[in-house]
Length: 432
Image (cartoon, rainbow, N blue to C red; front, side, top):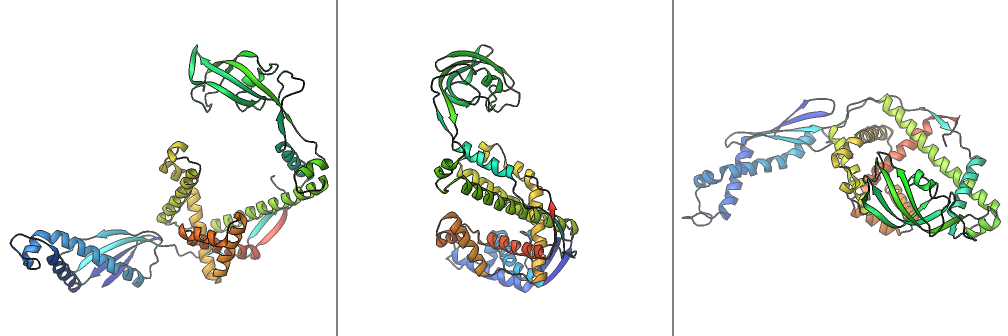
């Protein structure tokens, strides 16, 4: 076998392979013997069809099958001989197989670029200062208070006010005609929240349960419901029910009602701790992004397009899987495969660039991932999801996710190494 490599670009090679005539002849003889045992031709007993007759009727088929067999049997060895590690699926350029001649073919392959890495020790990172303000704590306490609210009928009954929750039936008309889907019963909205139509909600103020009202409101052209977008709509409304939202006092009783705290001070301390942990995770992610930005900027290189396509397909498959969990199809989500890939191409390319650079650093620094580290990660995932280790591991293996997990864990390990070597200056003001 003769192998030669033509360099097309920094990430593309064309591998030319030539197999000797004796290999071709040997495989042809084997193929015709096999064919002779199975073919049925009038006037000949099984296995007794003359070779020249077989060639007359089956030469094209045999040559095609033998050519494919020769490629399958030699390509791996040819790539190993060329010291080529594929970055994506090769593209085959197959020549016609001719009896009595060597068989030639070539493959266009992509390889990972050989990067002359810029120095990555001591990268400068400006980290946000870790701090939790009293305003943040108060805002989180108020959020929890709002979530603990409940609805009740006002006593004594009163007219609708801003912030009330109103249940109503209505019919919607435009130009005197009932709009398609415009008859709705049991519709609930929060007056003044602006989630439906601010003009409509404002005109509910002052009404009472049992009232009938006619309300005209205009909807913007980009409104979600195309039946009323850009139209002036008249509603015939019956107020069915009015409820007010009642919020608990922010006191020790409120803290105890949450079931975990003895008093408000304990709750406040827990909230501060939670916010601190959230900030710490966000700052760590921001520092990671800064570090990767610097690595990418300092190491420009041509990206194998096949790797980008593979990454895009993985992202698309993940997106489609998440939609399916919500019983939603791509069509229902209003996006095609092509649109998804177009929107996410830059993200996919960044992921590929990051992977190539971190893999290079891992090799240069001798950073490897152990089976124990993979098992520890699975144990953590099992604990977080409150499932058994065996169940989580089986899920990753069944869905062929172990390799992706190993890749991610190795990247995390390299980033941790780079962070240890980085020059991190604290004090940048936060954005939250």
